[in-house]
Image (cartoon, rainbow, N blue to C red; front, top):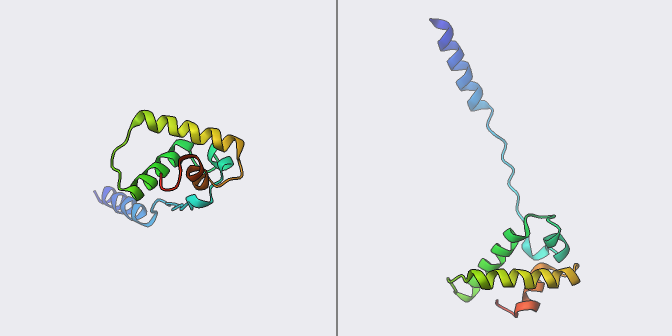
Length: 101
């Protein structure tokens, strides 16, 4: 009878003491180069594109997403980045789409 209680108590204590390690990673998007963006060196380029879209649309107060335009814009950015790998991706966005887009 006593053994199940001891085992349960021990497992409970072990679970409380050993908490899962969670790494918190922060990324300064302004420092990501086109080369890093296209080369999956930071994360999936689509994740960065989504963040950039939200950032620039938020600056303009725009809450509407046009999926077809979004895909076309991703391709335009990729094409620019392919020929200009050292340019920061945020600067590339401003060059390709104009300031505030």
